[in-house]
Image (tube, rainbow, N blue to C red):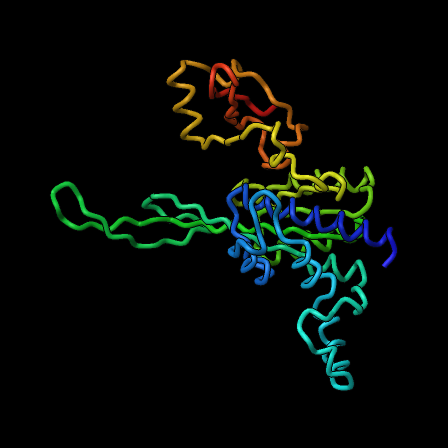
Amino acid sequence: MNSIQDFKIIRLYRAFNTSLQMCIDRGYTVRHPSIVAEAIMNKKYYSDVDGLDYDWFKQHFIKGRESAKSEKCASETDVSKSEPGNRDNLPWLPYSVICKSLTLRCQLIKEQSEVDNEPGLEQDRKVSKHEDGKAGVNLVNKKKISLFVFFTPALNLKELHEFREWALVKGAGSMIVVSGSKVPASVRRIARGLSGLLRSETSERLLGIQIFEEEELSYNITRHSSVPKHVVLTPCEAKEFLQNWKLTPTQLPRILDSDPIVGYLNLERGSIIRIDRVDPEGGPYQMYRQVM
């Protein structure tokens, strides 16, 4: 491979790592590809700071399944080719094929202790003991939310609609598209329009859409030493915080929805986040911001 192709693969690797960490930081569990889900559980191949090991990534995706087939055929005539790890001379897969194989499917499970069953919720029966010692049954509603992450060399309108249709068929609640080149303004505008569509029966968002360019994800900003920890408050936590301090949301300092952290965590307007900072002299302290 030449230097330009090497650069493109390394940039894609970094964008994939940031996307992976972004999904995990949002509370999702990676389900597909299964080899990635397994690698995340192995400290040898994955770390919270650096993400997936580059050699592992290159072996499984850059010289992946198709290269493995060619290696198997070559081993019939040359025994040395069948030795583990001897794949350096194999050709790399086409860039478009690599992007397609990197599609992530993640899942987030939310629980709500409500008696009434709601659409899209699965009820589980959990046994608990009351104060009088008698056993009771609580109905716990579980809502599974899926997130898809697609990678493409260059995003166009046709491909955006194809990704969206695929995500809707799979019942996803949101999707992320990572483009290897600059995304046209017209595609971003249409994506915002599609992301704002609501379900007619429940008035919920049909499918949230986020678009990133590889350059934006070439480094995970949340892993930088100068970036403090940002924690999103749940609606209950936000309500309790405002009541305790006798504040209204409009009295809080603001953080714009164009801020990279807001995009990374996919926060909606009105969300409240806590920023944990450490002062060298005064020690740890907290700041709060409302997304505007």
